[in-house]
Length: 394
Image (cartoon, rainbow, N blue to C red; front, side, top):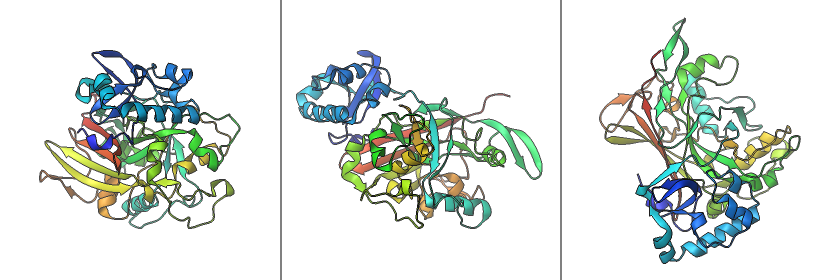
């Protein structure tokens, strides 16, 4: 899918690309259906930014000051507003390869959606509920950074240990799931021992990506008694190739849901619009047909990206450039807004019908999940897509 309408002059996201005429990976942006390498352009930016534009990851660019990044964005909009420049320096999207945009430092997955945690409680226990800490702060865990891959990378069905009917067995997961998420990419680091105040959180966020935290629900369910997820999650996490900046998202800033309980002072928000109106969709692709299985919105999240930065650092944990802070599954209340199959199928107990007439609970080999996110008026993330391949031989 091309999603041309997501990439107007109002967006100008950052990614890492290469092509036959530009074989070395370098920082690029996308405008309509053109990929443009930033180091080729006559930009008005600092020398430190010019150096970062030649690198094979976005990390060096992400770490520069917000003022330098804003100067770069302003110059980009001016230069690429000239169609002759785009024609001269742009490469067709179909001729370019998109790569992992960052070198991941750490991966931290949170739980921001109240609807998701309630839907999961209902799926597992038959009754809506929430973890006791959820309304006090965004709960999270440390994930696995080594298995984060760029959209389009195939996802091998994982092996693991599961328990059912009183017996324990080893084999390929029978409950392969996806999770519809976004994630903040950290640019400016922080010092070990220091917390980042909520009002300063945006200064540390380089931008946002789509994220699919693939999940093996049967493996995960057995290992999470009493510790958090490991093998049920760590086999693969996909992210979109384009990092959309907070400056591009600012016109779509919106209020977050009101807090139901008083929170600790470090999470006391004073910004009127700390969240974003970002529409999310997920499709299950089977054969030649795609079935839309979820439509959600970031603005429904109980906790914001700013909250994640504050919670992550309040104990003195430092941020590193390239850290990935994910939202957890972003869901709504209705069946058409469930951001994973575990919610939609009530833990694998209810079949859903797909566009090709087949039914399913979890993902089969050959199935794909395509996630998209957009704000309207030409600002979007493109897609984050992965297809399931059979497990390796034991």
